[in-house]
Length: 404
Figure 1 (cartoon, rainbow, N blue to C red):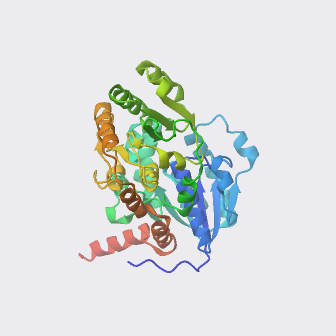
Figure 2: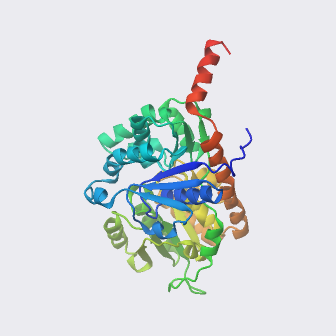
Figure 3: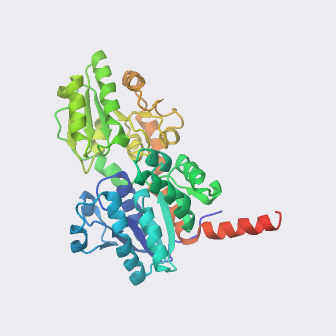
């Protein structure tokens, strides 16, 4: 189907996300909210916690709807999963009061709250959920009740959405498998990663002693310091690389695994050539000047940082994790893919790429596939007139009854 002309409808859209921290899901959600508003729609960005470094990047065209500060201060001891559950009542109140035409739930970790809130309110707001991570792997790596809850969420709740958007084909196939929905009912739309702002930010000056003409090669890893990103494997691979040739490693990001990673670096004897500077609001000057970007993740949805590295012309090496890297890199055409957790294979791929780096212009051309312009039209088609799961299910049922 051709995309409907929705640019001048001026519809009321709500976009729901947990907070405005610097994670990939938050960045993509904010990008979408800005793009919808630029197309002339009235956009509410609804957040559970009204804080995070991306708050300063919020466009004045987007209305921020933040829960009362007294509400979230009373829940500061809760985990993010519990926070999302605690937000159901408040989100339901928003839906009853505001009744937007459509709500986009921006990431996997808030989909459950959005589905329950719409169910409880019975408002006519169309609900589209965006599955931003690989659900099976996320469930396997959760423990106890969260694991069972996440699987139940997909099996029982996902079919109650009006439409589902998956960020990669791998995610879409996994959602279909565990939810029981036919694959054609799930729309794959790659993340809106490449923007004009990215290219502008890439040009910003970088004051860091490692990035000097004639300096040692600098490898960059980036992401929240958590188990999913598997930075210990990256550190072990880097130790193998440094045993062969001088190099340095920067891991941009913050998280609960910091002390563990620092301990691994000490054990490997590479602390002098490894830096963990924390979260960086503008990582693009680092990517534009790095010798290589390395993704060591155990699982992903569609890793936007891999696309960002390509857009910056930075050569890349990645694990072939479920899901996304193989789709982004065209199964190794634009950068080598290695098995998850294999530090020896990762080190060999790094050394090979340092010896024969990819053409930056070719990498930037590949990144254009993940532009905002390509994604937004498809998102608006789904939000304002695309495939509806419940309607499609009824059509499928009628066809079966008719023997078609």
